[in-house]
Length: 61
Image 1 (cartoon, helix red, strand yellow):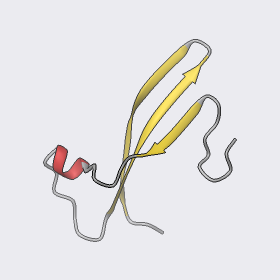
Image 2: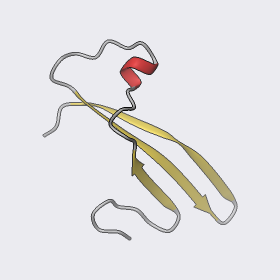
Image 3: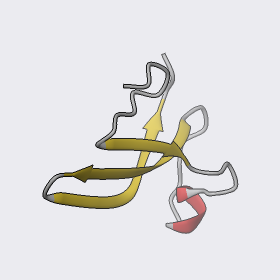
Image 4: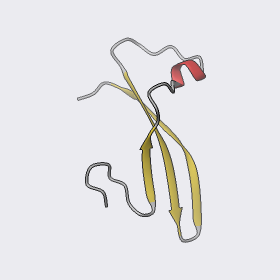
């Protein structure tokens, strides 16, 4: 496991480029002060493959 990102052989999260915006792409209204982070997720297990995006919206602790 990669200690910095939590990536493993089976699952990876790659940060999406900063120019990507779920707020603009989906026409969302996000409250000021909230942070938006997007990741490309790849899961590649013995019998399963999935590739998609994960988006997190909230306050950083």
